[in-house]
Length: 378
Ligand SMILES: [Zn+2]
Ligand SMILES: [Zn+2]
Image 1 (cartoon, helix red, strand yellow):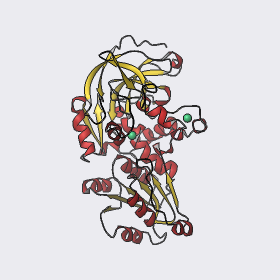
Image 2: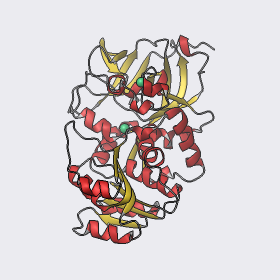
Image 3: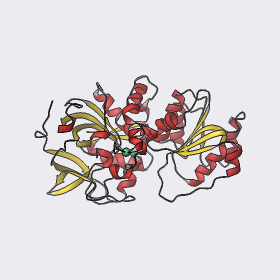
Image 4: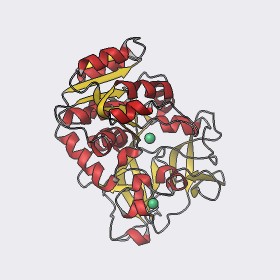
């Protein structure tokens, strides 16, 4: 069924006019829909730390721009090339974009797409898509293929994951599956491959870390440790299944953790969400025999850390990084929806809903650690 963009000519959106400035609510004109794009009416969009980082100007970005990369909603119109795949009314969760042509994309590892940066960060006037207009000026979209801080988003084909039959409530709670939740749960399931009865530790009990913790519990890990600097986050970690919690400032942290796991000489699986070198060096120290340490922390290029090669070699430790949970969203997001429905991914415990008018409050609450995962309801 071919569908037409014509009924939708304008949309509300949060627009970043200049890096470092608060976003502004604007009414935009919708200019066009390309043959390989889909117009989606968002029900909700999660806010992720990557939005904060990019908006602050730490990455090159062409402005004015629409950010947002954790959207979920309903298809309203479909570009000519995609009319056999999507129909108005389809319920969709949006995820990161990929090129669809490189070796990684060919082999179900689109998180490692060769062109990951180019297709997700529209950082030059030529790479950003210009589907929207503000007072005659083109507005850059295409952020993670979706730019979902907009009531109506124009989404690239590979960012769409169709999940038939999602209820309105599910579309709201599950909006952040496409980035933060997928990153934490995917690192635990796809990268670390946490095993039953094993020991697991997560450093940083934010949305990504707690998603990893829920996935480790679902996998049957026996000892589940959460480390954070905020007591409120550690309390929540306990509620979600942590058997032990530690404040990251504890001077005896390493000894206490190693003492919990005498048979393996330390923790078997460690997920780091901080990307802080000193923290990672500590994590390698408390990892046990054949321990795997995986970092998903966003850091600046050129960041380095010290590794004790003798320790790595004698104990067979593996240090690895992971992006977007190593996942193929087309397979992993439906899996996460099933986990949520089965009660094994209780996201309702980590999200807080905000109205569109409360966008700035949600933004600041995330930045200040007052909320784990803010979700804007459109
Ligand atoms: Zn690719
Ligand atoms: Zn993100």
